Length: 85
Image (tube, rainbow, N blue to C red):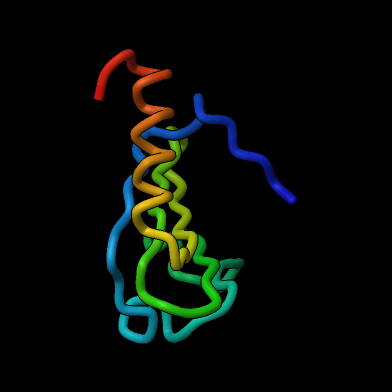
């Protein structure tokens, strides 16, 4: 398991996406032959995800079924890190 520190994150937001159109379906996507521009992708179902863009340029999209809860967590941490939203 890889841990990402908040200080490593350039941007984080919740977004809708098309699992089939953007990532060829659900599951864990990424690796050597994967389109690096899309970044890594982890999802079981649905079409809502947390999009992370790291300071090193890497991207990670994590699927979620809890859009409002995730938005609240991101707002909380943005206030702690940046002092405002």
